[in-house]
Image 1 (cartoon, rainbow, N blue to C red):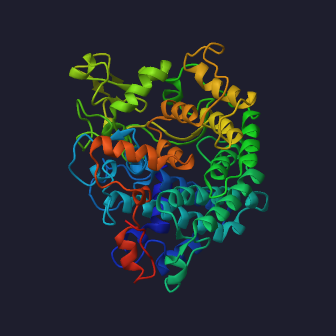
Image 2 (image 1 turned 180 degrees about the horizontal axis):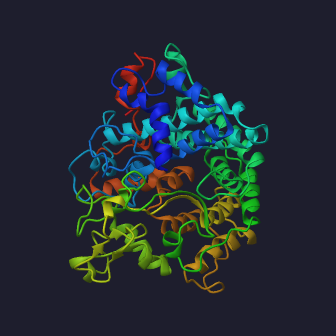
Image 3 (image 1 turned 135 degrees about the horizontal axis):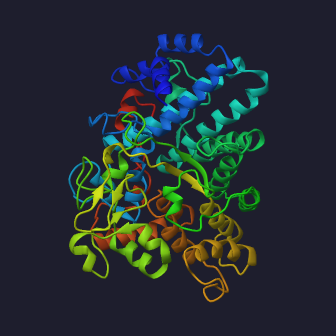
Amino acid sequence: MKYIKLLIFVITGAMFVSCDTDEFLNPLPDTSIVSENFFQSDDDVLSGIIGVYDAIQGVNENTQSSSVRFNRGVQLEYLLTEHRSDNTRSKTLEGSRADFHRYIVEPENIQSEDYYQSMYEIIFRANNVLKYVDNADAANINKYTAEAKFLRAYAYFNLVRLYGDVPLLTRVASSDEKELLYTRVDVAKVYEQIVSDLKEGVSYLDNSHKSRASKAAAQGILAKVYLSQPSPNYSGAKALCEAIMGSGFSLQSNFSDVFYKELNSEIIFAIEYIAGDPNESQGFSSEFTSFKRQGRQDGLNIVNPNLAVDFIAHGGNRTTASYAAFGDDVNLPVPLDAEIIKFLPFGSNISDRNLPTYGEQPGNAGNDWIILRYSDVLLMHAEAIMQGNPTNDTSAIDSYMKVKVRAGFDAVADRPSALTVDALLLERRVELAFENHRFFDLVRLGVAHQVLGAHATLKGYTSYNVRRLLLPIPSREINLSEGLLTQNPQ
């Protein structure tokens, strides 16, 4: 994406320069002129769409290591999700990254602020494409429109689940439209827009891509939206999952291959990175190391022992492909500081747990980030049928068991007579650990306060309360809004 990065710098780069004096949702006047002059052809519009993925991909901290906002995209998402669940934590208690797992994130937190900005950068770029999409070839207008709206919906889905009510922009706004830019919109209204945008993806996209929007990706994310919105649409989610189940996707026979054979049969939507290229790589793979630290931090996304306990009892063959113990931890029944190995930088060798190696450039890793895969869809299918209650429905249990059997469990002996919410949550935990689903799963299934409250008490995180399930709106945005943007209760 080197060309795309240069292109986006030309079109939207001034937004970053203006961060200290203007809000990031609004392009500078000269940026608008550049955009208008640029989007003249079908190729230009397509380049603009690819540029939205560049915003999701984000900037590697190994390239730009400043602690200020730098549009990290999804590269910091694990802090806002996995670290705020009972799955993982920081190696140390120092720095703003450690605030997430202790539930003490404040409005000034730089990583939360960066993520908030990154999602709105995606939204701005998508809205900018939509503004000029009619300059594309007539045969492509519907498809390009659907793709841009899919990406906008993806960003809003993340924002609404993490921050609650947020400003809702469906077009590029001018600098004097402060009420539009900063007025928070009710969660239900935001979900209405997300659903509308994703429905266009279902209607006009095909399954040509895995690293770009597709029909199946729109169906899968819409299914999760239906399960997550204030009034769940279980029948709609079930139908969408079944449509994907008939679209040719399949589970990888080897669980580890899901992560190291990229864009495989199980992948529905992933963000691509290129190893060794500072401009196209990611840094989170190196940050997940701690025993022989390869990243800039002491170690992030360290596995909590309670998750290791669940893996040992219920992970099957996923356990040795998900985390690893090093040094003294190797001899413990339950490791205290295990590391994630789903995203080891390419070229890693951890066969010697006292002298692991992590490839030539672990800070410039090329491991893709998986947003949606087929096992998630199968488990959502079961969830949609359950509707929050135990079920003996054969098709729900069938979908659940497909994931279990791939993990090495017996199709007959391990098949439950009834599937419970606790069993589904446990299966999702060990299947999708470290993929940023756990926090959202707990919230969606209505047990977040119960589970995370108990976890916080066990760990001594005294700042936890139910209000901490929402992140605070970044102070910088409230300041820029001149009082229009309100804060979440803390």
